[in-house]
Length: 167
Image (cartoon, rainbow, N blue to C red):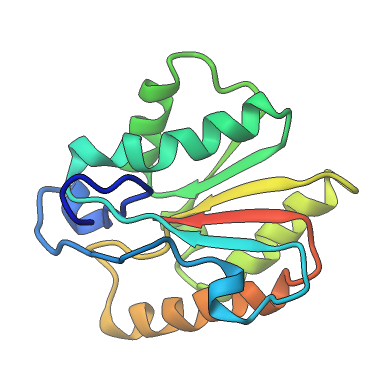
């Protein structure tokens, strides 16, 4: 993100673990931007950040806004990110469900099923999903599958009241 710009930023797991690899985008990617979910209720955004200091400012408002609106929130993140979120929420995470992306995301195809299960537990309600599916330990093949998964999110949830943020 350019200096002085506001908006969501993205911090990848490599950056969280002290690695490099800054990701930049002019604006968040949304379902409308992608054209994949046009006409539906799904909103799919990317959050860009640069290092651990930027992680919470990039994703915590998404969770806090959902909780304040009494929306169920699912955070599918690796354990280091879950720890940062729990610390950042300072005990204010009632209504937030965690899932370990390190386990669930071993096969990116299982992620969409897990989101459907979460949506099914909250019928008729808008839900929020924070899903961090790429991190340093991912192999090249896993990253390719994750890219496919990101594209499928828009189609899978096109007519579903879900807001997805992928850091």
